[in-house]
Image (cartoon, rainbow, N blue to C red; front, side, top):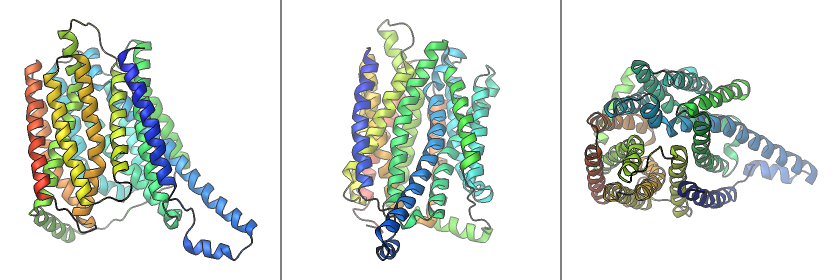
Length: 462
């Protein structure tokens, strides 16, 4: 067993333990009937009480299993593509670093800009329809990725960016709407169990996808084989959704006058120092995430070249390790806040994630060895897992719900500019990559100070 496989096995065991603790904590608060229903059933005999209780539980767990099966296949398709994206472009299509960087930038920009209109399309056509569009768009992205044509590869990354936005918005929107439609809102803790199940599914599917991608790439001797497997997952999930999911339509009919007034109020909100600090944190950290997604394979390859080690490393196994570390970070954040979250606690978690991730980026420069860089990226991904739920909590507590969508759509503009600047200025060689890592690390450290000084210890909801 090689070093990477041993590391993945250790992370997987830790992930199982963390997921079990997380799920059992969520399950302990689950009551699959409302208080009114329980009071009514108390008047009935035990046989009828048991029958109705089992029926409610059966409907809930069937709903959960039905959603997680399709959702798991959907995110598996996404992770299968992500694990070998750089390697496929570099080793199979033989593209230069600037072209690969431009392709990655295209995907990130389309993912960001599509957030401006995906929500309105979901409201108009329904969440089930949008989820089906995800499978079609993602399948087209895979098919064009198999082509050696550079223009088609740019189309592939544009489609991939749009499909990624749909994946992380429409599916959960459908789940929440169907959850309320089936009457589970009165069941105490049921939505929390759903979110816990989604987090666990994300973690294990991400880890498993990297292993499967590695296996197929090795068996077929092609860095593009995982994209074919992704197509299979997309096809199966599309059939499941078409046959078993109900449609949920959103609200429509927003007039332009109301939209203009909301936009004006959102711009006024940017005068709040705490919101500005969160904006900087979002932009600088997620820009760093994008840089790492693009740069980690070449960073590892550079270390192998310096050590006169030839051949490609196990990209799929390494990707699985990174995703396992990220999932552990999410569970660690959930464990810290298990007795109740607050703006102060989330702010400190974000500060810790920002400072540690800045250190991890510096370690990739200081360390010249392959293993040192690998562990530095694992540390960075652990910070990603801690950052995401904490920053989401802060955004929810510091910004009123009706203004969140417009505000965070505006936040995508500076983020996209930063990503394009970082990736399109990339050139061949280690020095250019190290300069970008140094810049991202410095920006993250500046953001730590901003969040510490500007984010209040309490919020409107604490």
